[in-house]
Length: 113
Length: 113
Image (cartoon, rainbow over all chains, first blue to last red; front, side, top):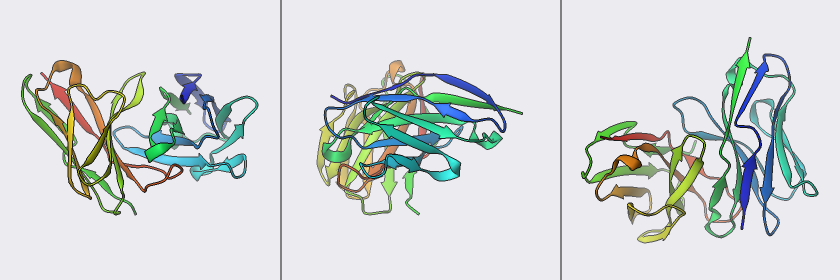
């Protein structure tokens, strides 16, 4: 069975410093992995997805994630945080048939001036 | 752009009422999904549909039913609302296929008093 663990429920960074949001997954076969972002009072927006092509995936707004099979990780990074990055971020694994998604509990990112 | 529209942003209902949450997508997607979002739990799948008049239970279907009479519309029904169904409800749609992303609506925040 697939599962996702986001290792931090809250992350706080200063504007201009790097962002690291950590995600570990469990999957019995080669997974499809996603990061979604949710800004306050908004729906979820796809940041990036991994589907067994390049292990380093670039997404929107300067975010990227690296798929590491040996570590079963899919951490999200950004070199320099912006105030507009403050949001909740979800790591997600696809459960195969019918594209059911399994969500992590979410990481709330705060960005301070 | 893909558009997933949920009919209400906020709803307040009384215990025991029958509640309908409506979702419409404009991309001719085969799959549609209903999730509920609660703090610290991420998103949990209630029901999904892979075709007109077809439905499958997700992880937490108890107390809910769904209807899909037309391809573009997927309704979530709370037959007799209870206070523990107070939550944010998110609808999503996506093309058939395990690697395809889901597109989300803005959500309906339901309060059951």
